[in-house]
Image (tube, rainbow, N blue to C red; front, side, top):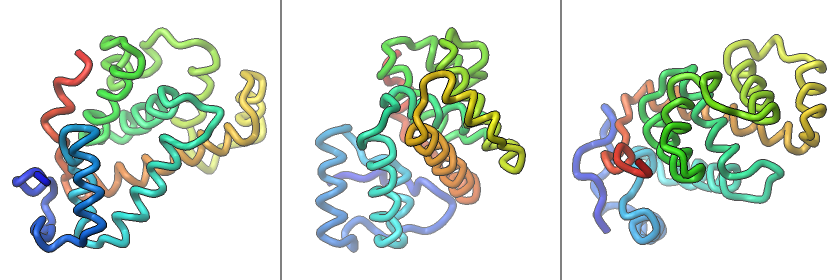
Length: 191
């Protein structure tokens, strides 16, 4: 298993050879599927229990069953990360939007300002909600949820929008606190 030899954060992480067999196997699977171990995972190795919790929640949220497409979930990650100016997540999830949409310009517009992207009314409502939840969570009202329902989102979908936005707000803050750096591979993907 190869892991970025440069520490992805300003905090110390344990050497790769000290990681558990479970984490080593997980990172080998990342290498096989992605070609690298995402730095966010390497950063979490300071506490492998937290790494597993982070990975399990991320995988369920972003890859599990949902009324939201994988692209829509990545769009939420990018819109929230743009508000928070999270370099790591903008690089990583901007690449995912480019890849999933097949549209490099969409990924770039999403990173800069989702309102500049050519979005349908459903996607715009979803992102408006995620951004309001990021910027003004105390101001979310029933009318905000009703706007999503009018665009065809179920209550379960609204839960998924909120959970995705909340997860990336947390992740953005951890990345900022540790000065987490994205893997260089993200910058060239799907261009």
